[in-house]
Structure formats: structure tokens, C-alpha cells
Image 1: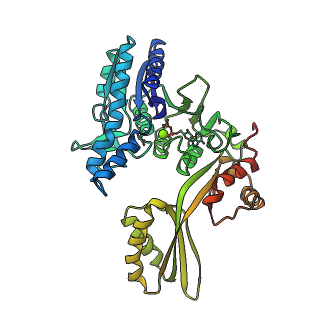
Image 2 (image 1 turned 90 degrees about the horizontal axis):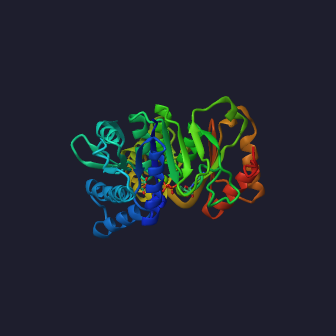
Image 3 (image 1 turned 60 degrees about the vertical axis):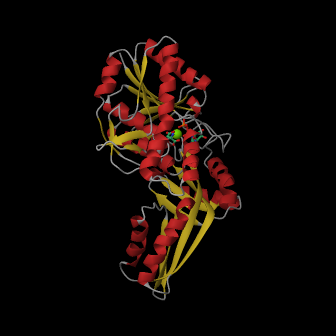
Length: 407
Ligand code: ADP
Ligand code: ASP
Ligand code: MG
């Protein structure tokens, strides 16, 4: 008998009919002779609705209470799914993150899982139940409810699959798998049959929200292969697993888009050791994540640093930098710009192929799309473009690498 972990995202449990669809699917899986643990998200729109509600009563909601609030979204779904399974003649029991033994650190809204004690889940499985676990939530060792960051139900599924040593982990969503680009943006994007953890991680962390990036990081670290599939059909999906040599023949696996980016440029920084660190420390101290960083060659003893970040962090970053800049020199100036986006091409085949960047920049140039910033890693080339060009840029890069054709 195999143990299977299945995760169903927000759209897949978005209304009572869909919850019944999930109930039928998990029952079928169990009746085929498997032990089944199901992780569910909040019904689509519920988490966003709760965030909006919180902002209506408080400009800056207390983080502890925000997590208490957000955790109710998933708690609604587990109860409904367990009821639906039972109504169909099955045996199911719901479990919050805490009841499933998911212990996290105490960083509210983006907690990390410390450990999972799955004793209760195993016991309920042994009793013949389909165990329905709330995604996205955990509990601190002192008993506070936490959440795992947006999209965090993916992480619950993968971490729980590792903890109970599941034979199979399946992430069910509203598309057939991981595509060469977001199929909603690029109509001729193709489903990728197999992708390495590393590529999936780069795509997820550069805007392909089909998987939460931290969940892929976890899967990579603990060697948990998983499938991404569609909850509305039985089509084969995408297997995310360890890299193998046959994967290198494809140069670019996929293209992703990160919208809503912003850029801060700091000019006239005295070009002395330690100043760049001081500037960036101010950002770190404010708990802000920055992405691309570029420092220009100094002219007349002055340096210039630009970096990108999410536009929702722009105001906080400007405030944090203002103070740091003053302590360095009165001449330091800070300018901010939003309305930009990041387009990334990802593939492990890049390691063994040259000319990939030139091909990407050439295609963008021919399409009349201006590149503002560039950053590269071993398996990724990313560019910043104006947001008016963002979708055209994704389609252009996708076509330039002929990702619409079978490899
Ligand atoms: P869920 O609610 O099931 O967790 P998400 O909305 O988080 O689903 O993720 C699925 C969505 O991710 C798809 O509807 C699709 O628009 C988007 N997406 C972005 N990039 C990709 C990609 N490369 N492949 C597949 N889907 C993608
Ligand atoms: N409900 C949470 C969110 O919307 C977690 C998830 O769906 O994975 O981000
Ligand atoms: Mg998701």
C-alpha cells in the first residue's frame, strides 16, 4: 500500500462543486489501495479577502492576529472537504497545521518549518481515514499560529510528504503542469514533462507562481520528487525531480515574468570600502528583500548603486535608506522608479551553451524592447524592462528560444 500526499490549491477547492470533485478524487485514490493525506488551500479569493478585511480595521494589522485570521481560510476548506468525503460514504478527518504537528519559527506571515511530528497524522491514516490537512499554517513551540508565506500550502504538502515518507507527492492546480511560460500569458507555451529542482526553483523565484519557491527549495534539500497536475482532468503533469544528464540538451526550459518591480538608485556615494555595505544593511535591517544589485564604476571618487525590489516595499526602502544615506554623506541622492518588470530565461543547458544572452538581448532589441538592467546566474538570464513591454518581452523571449516547438 502506497502513501500519497495530494495538495489542491485555491481554484481547485473554489466552490462546493469543486470541493466535491476533490472529495471524489481523493476517495478514488484511497479506493485504489492507497493511504491518502490531502493538503488544501483556502478557497480562491478567501486569503485576499481576509487581508482586505484586516486592512479595513487597521492600517498595519498586528502580525500575530493577521496569522490567526489568515489561518481560518484553510480551516474552512479542511472541514468542508472532510464533510464532503464523509457524505460520499468515505472516512475522513480534518487537521489544522498544529494538529498535524507542523512546528515553525515565530516569524509571522513567513514562518519557516522547524520540524513536523506526524504521529497524529499517521495514527489517523492507520485508522483508515483520508487525512485532510490545512495548508499554509503551523504553530510555534509556544503555541502561536503562524503562516508560511503566500502560496505556502505547496510547502505544507512537500514538507509533510517528507515527514511521513510518502511514496508520491502530487500538487494539483488549475493548469496541466509547469509550462515553458505562464500559459495565461503565452498561449503557445508547452507543458514541460520533467524539470529539475534547480530550474523549477529559479522559475518559481522569478515569478512563475505555479509553485511557491520555498516549497521547491525544501523539496530539493530533502530530495522530495513531486508532480504538478490538473485537478480537473487526468492528464499527465510535470515531474519535478533531481537533474539528470538528459536534461542538459534543452538550453532554455522556461521564461518567467515578475511584475510590479521597482528600482532605487543611490548616487554620489563616496567610493570607500564599507559604504555599499552600509547602504544595503539599512535595507536588510528593515527586513526588505532586494533582487538585482548593480554598482557602477566610480567616477570622480563617487559610486552609484541601483537595485530592484517589489514595488510594495518601495516606500519602506526609501525611508530606511534616507537615514543611512545621511550618515554617509550629505551629497548622497536617492531616486526611485516603479513601473518596471523582470523577465527571466531559465535552463540548466545554459551551463554548456554559449551565446544565450546575446540571443535573448538580440530578440528583445529586434522587438524594440529596451533593457534597463541585466543580471545572470549559471542557469538564468534576467532583464528589467518597462512594464508596458512586459508581456511582449515574455512572448518574444519564448519565441526566440523556440519554446513553442517540441524540443
Ligand atoms: P494554486 O491555487 O493551485 O496554488 P496558483 O494560482 O498558485 O495555483 O498557480 C497556478 C497558476 O500559476 C496558473 O493558473 C498559471 O497562470 C500560473 N503560472 C505562472 N507561471 C506558470 C508556468 N510556468 N506554468 C504553469 N502555470 C504558471
Ligand atoms: N491561501 C494561501 C494563499 O492564498 C496559501 C496557498 O494558497 O497556498 O497564499
Ligand atoms: Mg499556489
